[in-house]
Length: 319
Ligand code: SF4
Image (cartoon, rainbow, N blue to C red):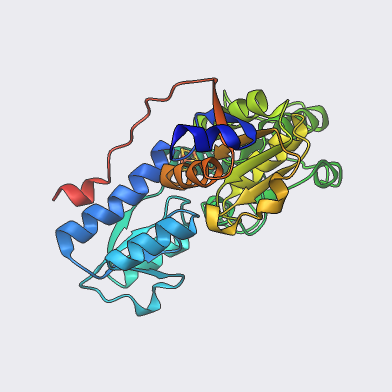
């Protein structure tokens, strides 16, 4: 684009939040499928969307991944990868009874929550899980213990409505919740049940916390805040809420630049930009390119943390 063309366009400040996009658990899960395809060839079956992003799923499908919700149709001579969100024990037992070639890509930080829940339940504690009903991570975490041993609460009202339990209690949380809302819910649980046991630090993962902090710092002066991510991605949806709560005049979730309603840019002088933990950076770059075709961009990098977390792919792939 020639310089003088740029000068004719109206200016737009982009407050680009960092960290954003892929976390270590998502990178590991995607690498797991890619390595399984390289090692075993196509098809490689994947139980549930490997991570909650339409573009990632489409790219892996084109490479030969087959996404299934049920293990019934998976042949015994093909690998099946379990997604980053984790699965209930019954799904692992199902894979074992069918003698499937299972590769578990559950994020290690979700596995930590699973083992914490199992430890509490075997110590005789009932576990209150803070999370969102029907999210696959919550289904997987609740499925670590027998029915009734883990009780889900989604709101402060749910906590107020809990019965007075006779025995010992503990709590855990989904990894991708709003840090601020979860603090309030943990405080309410502790006020109601002073003896409740819990993790030394909350279970919300480093990636979720870091992305929310960066959005908070970037959002204050924004006329519009855009989070790149899919609607099924819990942490992406939380980033939209975080941007609004932090002072952005408006905030929205965007799958990709092609779906952006460009009339929303009318009257916008400052736009914030981030991406959920399952959204590829290429989608952020494509949106910036589309913005630059219309406006003269000034990019302010708002960096609140640096990340160097890397998780190795599962051992099964090393053989
Ligand atoms: Fe793991 Fe957190 Fe990423 Fe989920 S968002 S995959 S818990 S690092």
